[in-house]
View 1 (cartoon, rainbow, N blue to C red):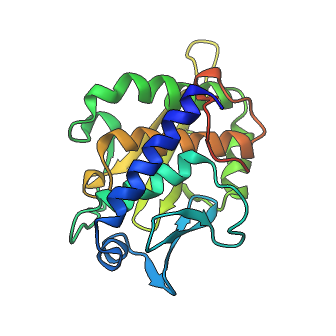
View 2 (cartoon, helix red, strand yellow; view 1 turned 45 degrees about the vertical axis):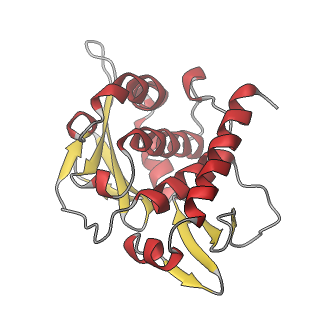
Amino acid sequence: ISEQATAYELVYQHDRREFCKRDPETMAKNAGLKLRNGQITVPYYHTVLAVNAENGEVTYEADPTKPVPVYPRMMTLHHLNGVKDGAQNSGILIPFRKIPMAAVFDSAYRSMALEPFAQGFSGHLKDFVRAGELLHTTPVNMGDHAVTFQCFPKIALTFVFWDGDDELPANATVLFDQNIADFIHPEDTVGLAIEGANLLLQAGNRPIAPTMDMVGLSKI
């Protein structure tokens, strides 16, 4: 097991301990989730996870014996542990740089999410369109093509893509609800963008950049 994988597993175990200090019913309600039969059901991008309300263990709802990659496990507990009481979306979309306290993470966001996404679909607009359809995203009239990808019931990311030409390279941005920091820590918005871009690239059969080839990302 790599050092990165070990570090992520340690973070996940810490997240489980923090989860156990909180009221699962309140966390579920604030996140727009359901607590039934001792577990919180969590739709996450293209799949459905389940969180054990007693110990914070994250599994697949359909097959609890199948290992869940560590990244979605971490993101799920970060969301539940971090969502604020009464958190509500504003309906106003903003770029990453306008998320409160996110500026310090801009370099990671660009190198690990935005640039791999733009470069991966450069010259392959149709593949991006097809990827969005395969993942049941919602098309949005922005850029050359854009989709809104539902990460959690109350967190959606909008991926906007402009294809390149002879003069300009491909470009992209990810838009977040203005109140995203009420649902998850600003640092974790980078992780959510990485996961969304990673899944879209996989669905579009496009290469994953080395900077995105991280331990524990979701697989299709």
